[in-house]
Length: 287
Image 1 (cartoon, rainbow, N blue to C red):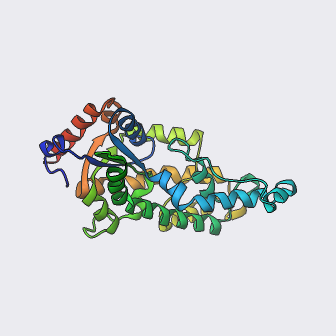
Image 2 (cartoon, rainbow, N blue to C red):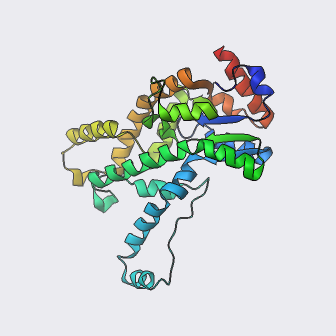
């Protein structure tokens, strides 16, 4: 680790941290707090994906829908209107909307082959955004004179890495530049995350073999007709399994590449000093 002891962390003139774990456990909350309260640069992986690596896909998808409307088609063809996504740190809906859900097109579903194609695009985009972390650390210091850096990752980081491989290219690059911190949720957090997701299901990204297994399992439990799948029902079915699928990968990432903190401890962080103390304790717990 780049901060081997609590003292190394506490007295470091440049603090560089990467937070990972399931969405909804406090990563963006902490990053936003640090950005607003002190000289911390906030690098959002999801924002980078939506602006740098998938912005064109998102805009083209919106244009394709607009082209179906004669009035809008005429305006687009004459360059009279512009269509783009209004993505921000706190509004990442354009990415989720583009990813979509497989199933019945009358209920907003995509053909499964198209859904998988977009999943592949997201995988490539997320890996690229993660590999940009070192560049943004250098850029934040050189251009904006920020001494401290926090990387706020998406929940799907664990889908693209092998934490048991000491030569994993993504984890190697991240660990060389940041202290990797897992925000671990409890059973109660898992229940609450599932409840929230059931109320407002949103598209997410998963590794291809996991998705393929879950998709065919879902079809076998129903009538086997792809075109009649309820898109929201499928992604609810997938999410519940994803929590169990991801947990041991996160744990291995923390064990082999970083440290862990609890979601409850993160919820109690209200200042940079609180955050410094939390990370110092996490490093001490690992020793």
